[in-house]
Every structure is written in structure tokens, then in C-alpha cells.
Length: 213
Image 1 (cartoon, rainbow, N blue to C red):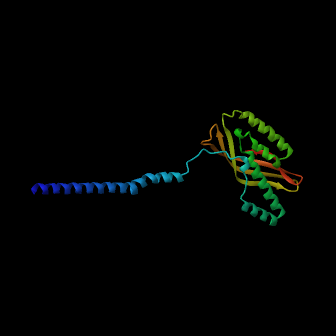
Image 2: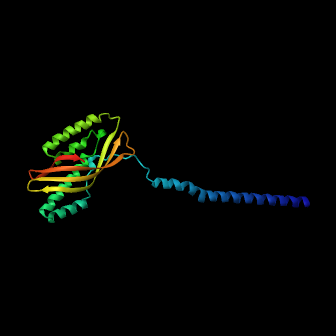
Image 3: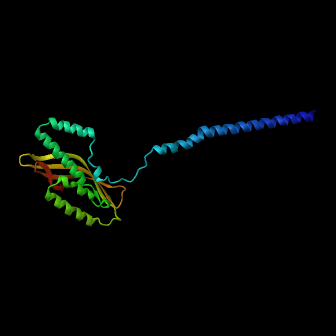
């Protein structure tokens, strides 16, 4: 009898140990699924939402100066009710801003094509000069293995002189520029003014001179 009772006790103890082990295993599984797994997954999900810094890309000139349609509508509505002198000023400032960003933004990888978009803004004399300026840049940065680009954004424009009767105007354009020299990382950022001289040709204002200050 004593031997049977001893066996029963051992069996009970073994069962209890087994049950405790199962409970411990179940607890570990629960903790893993509800705690440790969250700790592992959470950073992964967070990283998905974090924007990894990418190398800056020079924006093609064709994407420049595409104002929001609502902004254009406001400008057009203002122009309709504004005095003639104010409409002239708005028109000249728009031309100056559009010209400056295209004139100051180019890269050897795009074959300096942005200069081709300036024709509509310029006089024939200015167009001739820009054509030679483009060729000069192409020769200067002809090695396509070495990336070179400038990106220009207009900060503000100011009318220095405007005479609608004589058809002459001077606009000072303040710009922020980024220079990418043999790299697309960490561009050199600097600020530069561009003095534009405009004249009226067949009732249209055209850029007749551009001078970086």
C-alpha cells in the first residue's frame, strides 16, 4: 500500500510539473505574440512611414512656373479690374519670374535644353546672345561623366523702372540657387540677384538683357 501511495504521489507531482511547464510555455507564447512581436514589428511599420532622404534632383525646367489654377484665376480676375499700369506691372513681373527660373536652371545631362524655352520671352538680340551662352556652357561642361547643374528659384521681384510710354523696364529678381558639381548630394546653396532689362516689341514685353549681380 505504501508503495502504491508513493507512486501516486510521484505521478501527481509529475502531472503538476507538466502542467506548470505547459502554463509557462503558454505564458511565453502569449508574451511573444502580444508583446515581443509588437516590439519587433512596430519599428518596421514606423520605418515605412519615414521618408528616407534621397539625393536632390534637378527639376526639369518644363516643370517650373506652373502656378496653381486658383492662383492664376485670382491674378486674371485682378488684372481685369486693375488699372492699365497695374496690369502692365503684373505682366512684366510674371515674365521676369518665368524667365529667371528657366534662365538660371540647367544641367549638362539635359543638354541645357531649358534655354530653348526662353525664346518666347526674349528679343532677337537677346536670343542670339543666349544661343552663344548655351554653347559656351556646353563646351565648359562637356564631360557627361561629371554631373553639373544649377537650379534656381525666384524669391522676390522688384520693379526698378517702368516706363510704358518709352517701352523700357528694369526688374530686379532675387533668387535662391543650388549648384550640383559632380554630385547630386549636398548642393552648394547661394543667393543671387538677376537684373533684367525689358523692352516693348510689338506691344509685347521682351527680355533684352540679363545680368547676374
